[in-house]
Amino acid sequence: MEPSRDSRATLVDLLDRILDKGLILNADLIISVAGVPLLGVNLKAALAGMETMLKYGVMQDWDQKTRAWESEHRNKPLPFLTEGEKIELKLYGSYYYHKGSYEAWKPGHFYLTDKRLVLYRSDFEEVIFQMAIKDIKMLTLKEEELLAKGQKKPILYLFDKEEQFHRINSTSVIPLKEAIEQKVKEHGSLLQANPAIPETKEEEQIAGLLMEKEKIIHQGKGKVWYLEPAAGIRQTTWIPGYLFLTDKRLFWWSGFDRKIVFESSIETISGFSSGMKNGKGILNRKDEKVLLVITRPGHPSMLVSSFSGNSEDINEWKKALGQLSVREQETETCPECGKEYPVKELLEKGCPNCGWVSPVYKNEKQKVAVE
Image 1 (cartoon, rainbow, N blue to C red):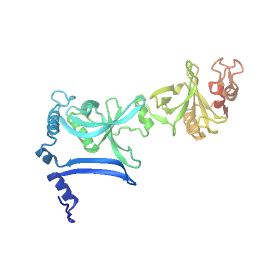
Image 2 (image 1 turned 60 degrees about the horizontal axis):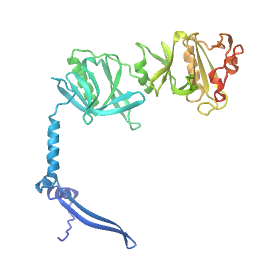
Image 3 (image 1 turned 180 degrees about the horizontal axis):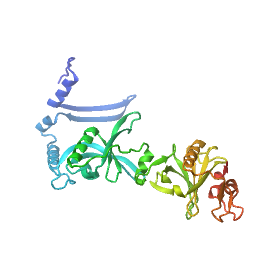
Image 4 (image 1 turned 90 degrees about the horizontal axis):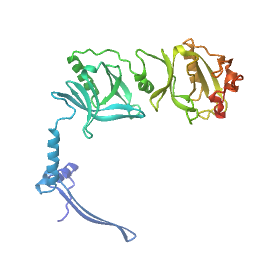
């Protein structure tokens, strides 16, 4: 066969030729350097449309098995459906799943039925999320950044009967929201207006821990380090997390363990004091400040330090506590013997009566000089 050239042929003509007639490649290729053969390639390939392939008896077994599998699974009922339950809308999307230290957007297909909303992943035959229509009490959209910075898209916040929210992402989130609203209306339920959406990731993570009608008053600008008390063979350790002041309590929340490690009601907080660290602190800076929250006898006290390493965060916490009529103390009671001494003397030198020393100052790297 003599090769021919057609300068008027286009890519469309080439694809048409391959799909209709097919293309056979049979080539022997030898790669050599300085006349020395190094690599040999024997290439044999057939390119054609499936109709042409089947016409010449190529890939018939694969085609039959594929069509049989598709036919079987297309007619197979979805395992999560109950008797008489009808699918009214199907959309691809994902659900924000978080448990323990694990958090991720889990993908699948949303199925809106006449009874509930379900996110189902067919490859694992797994129901990732489901909620009965009657349990949907509020829903709203919020623009959020997902993967690419600067690019935002609407995320659907779905609130259940316990007023806990669930984040939903979909390729067509607005039609999904409208369909859910219509379905709730058909069930004779009324959606509540103006749901409170957390503004920060930390608020979102602790939303389920807030009491009924509890409101966050102050949370600072970033992470706060908490001095975890010694337990067993473990010594006192500074660990990072988030500090929250609400209208009912002060609590420190561990983002890694996803639990409240320390909390004290407003009524049990008797005062606070602050100090600067001598030498290098947690972040190897000299301007780290420490805040000591003092509670009444019989309740645990807490010492925290700003994650950012500057004094501004601690000063903001002092203002927030001051607004609750909690005073900054100049004297403090020794937790060991109950004698009262100046805070500076008690924390820097220990109790002159019984010799008690704060665990913060036992380690030279964690010494502070109280202002």
